[in-house]
Length: 377
Ligand SMILES: NC(=O)c1ccc[n+]([C@@H]2O[C@H](COP(=O)([O-])OP(=O)(O)OC[C@H]3O[C@@H](n4cnc5c(N)ncnc54)[C@H](OP(=O)(O)O)[C@@H]3O)[C@@H](O)[C@H]2O)c1
Ligand SMILES: [Zn+2]
Image 1 (cartoon, protein in one colour):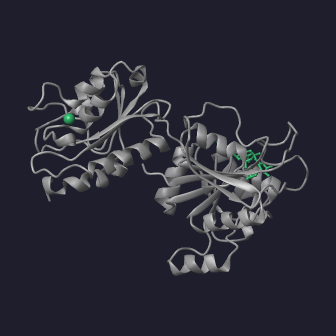
Image 2 (cartoon, helix red, strand yellow; image 1 turned 90 degrees about the vertical axis):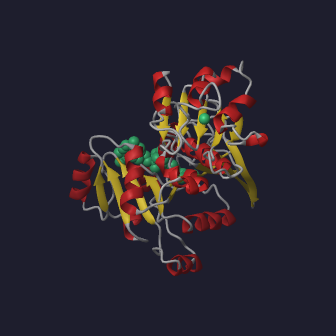
Image 3 (cartoon, protein in one colour; image 1 turned 135 degrees about the horizontal axis):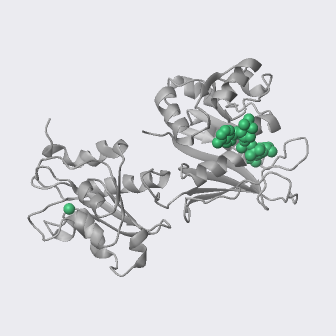
């Protein structure tokens, strides 16, 4: 099920704190950065914060610039992004500014929390998600029921930590403020947990007044059947590679990337690479990896099309090459149709060999695009 693109945004002190312990909110950002945040807000469909931040800061979470709001309206969007919050307890102040400013509001909560929120008269669409709060379900719901494609998450630390440790953040926008908090009781940006992002990819650094914005993307593949944000990035790259294949009337155009568990790209390839008219993408990619590289055992192969199970042109199909390389996780965008081989079941071969196969059909249209001339209809 598709998720929105999830962008985490936070300002942090040099010693890693989000706030101090005083009654007022600590101003970490510079005025110029508040304007940048306003611009980011204007570009998203929804903004999410945790109940703890509503209680601590009583924020409005608006787009402050009238020009940016006018531009949203001119594009046929709501004047303000949807405001979203999460609370397990439902213990929220019905008079908080969050509920009474800006556009529509949604509260995701538990069944118990929903009862409490209704009793308190919280002015929002209250969505109970059962006995606990599952972030994947929340993101699916926002995408399917609220049309949210781009979600900005503005903290606090409890929320950021969960989204990163569950591999659900697509991007991290961190503003480093030149001051120290120095109080161990103050809230930290990131808590303990087993983080799934691997070594993050640095996308941008930008000084803004006396603060520095850094933007990162997670790189590490997921570890099981549940896709992470990084899985989507790598599969999107495989689909881009598919579009670079020399055209053919007799074979599919496919792209493949091999990525180690820590997010290091080990190899990439595409169909008919290097003037070999028979080369398959996964085969071309694996041929570039060192077969003795121990990282292959923990690696994921991203292939825009399900790896082949049988082929006439070579002794081993790609599903077998992947298993022989030691790889045990494959992410793909669509299952091979019967165009060239009837009943091909590369996923079945891989699974029989102990590999996990994840199909992310959100990428199917892009994976099929360079193959339109080979498909029915
Ligand atoms: N510098 C910045 O950029 C920035 C940004 C935002 C916040 N902050 C600071 O961060 C502090 C607040 O952070 P925080 O970590 O205490 O609060 P938070 O992350 O905003 O909210 C935590 C609350 O959200 C709910 N929640 C989170 N995960 C949940 C789950 N899986 N299931 C059910 N409920 C869940 C719970 O609400 P219930 O307790 O109601 O169950 C939990 O207490 C404040 O001091 C604020 O100033 C700083
Ligand atoms: Zn193949």
